[in-house]
Image (cartoon, rainbow, N blue to C red; front, side, top):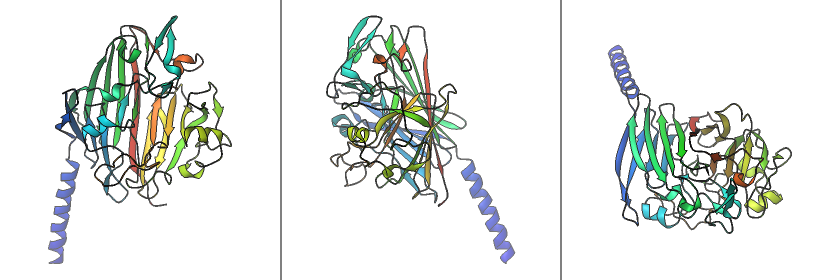
Length: 378
């Protein structure tokens, strides 16, 4: 009798495993509301074969949720965001959004190209931030879903008109989100212009790998020997400063909360970490820029990019006024962090920084990967 039970158990286990292995990537689509301007917004849910999903809306190309298993198989959302479109439209600190035309800050909202000065919206005190009053985070993108053999993909398209938010050139932008079966979110950026312009695209998801508390116990490694110190308005001083013997040294993984309250002028100016790190190995292309790890859940996220910099923002301006999705609570200080792969802030005004200029006939291309995995209990 025991032998028969064992055989039946083996058969059922084989069938169950086969069913799991036969899971294929899929995409669901559903309405997510209508903007104040009367434009319908759709939500796409990308699912892979490994119990992971990514939710994206066409408004702002926003990632509204990333659900990924922990070391025990418990699936939890590891991003900050809202439940409704009206909340994103009303007041959002760029939760999950695509950022453009220029991610980060441009001093005094001004830059020059070939002797012509361009004036941008000053939406961050006297500076320009994240594309202006209506950047790429606040427009509705055209979506093209596609199922691949090993991934679920969503292509987003948008044309930014000449002088939109003050930027020259008609810019055609394409962003591809691809959720692969190995629990990676691949993001590819492409763009062309008909007039010389500047461009710095990035993604502004707030991560919390524990899913339910602040990020101070997370451990972070940044593959960078230098960072960009900033002035009082968070504009880079133009210097590349060594991280050695400073709170900005993340060359070896360390707990984020370890040095964040140190008496350091740069931490005081940012209210914590809100700086761009100068990534190593910039001639290599796609390589590891950061590794984020939550010891409690075992979740790990590796960030790979071909960009020269990464902005680490520790959620310093979250102040308990924004409602937490699927909860009666609010997002408190440092309840999430951002790792924004990008060119340096204020590059149009710093000739020594890697160029952000894009000319007609050139093809802008950039790639970032958020790769999720789990580590055993330490």
